[in-house]
Length: 261
Image (cartoon, rainbow, N blue to C red):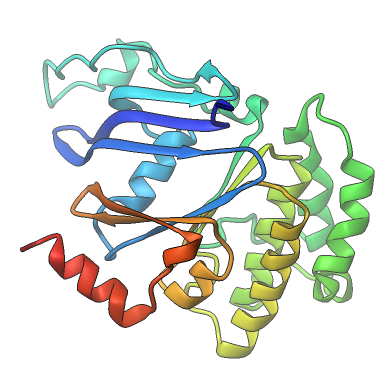
């Protein structure tokens, strides 16, 4: 059987001394997209930040393209809460190395440079692509996927709507020429019209064959984009569903409550 592009084995993590997620197992193969759905505040974003190298994993394995991204073994216990432990210990995962491998994380919240223009942000984004090719072709595709950005190319980020900033974030992620693109709550807080517009763009990205890992609270939107769905609750994966058994919102709620029974 083909090796997964992304494989997570018994991954645990959080913000010492608080553990947020535990023993997470997840896989994603070339050409497929998966979704993660669960209540707010249960650790989905912390898990994604760990995959991206922004948070050190406590235990478990992160394999991408057959290469281990994190150090093996368990994180040692913090000796003192009054010292900056990061000064004395080696990072267990390097975010720069994660990007070099092509795992690109588009965070929730449109964390962009507010005083830069759309053009300026998109001009620096390809630096993350490193030696991966295809940037010029992707720049052309960006204008097709997000025609609104061409209209707003000289506008500063702080003057854009939430949906437009989300488009810039995703466009910047694409210009890093990802092998896997993680989208964390891409439709959060958007108007219905903007959700439709952004959803159409994400579907077009999906149709190119680029693997996606998507978190979203709109389960109908999420299930329309993915091959498999993982339910995530209280820091653990409770169920995996394939495309032939995608539930509607009411069924999802029933499955989530079942996990507490």
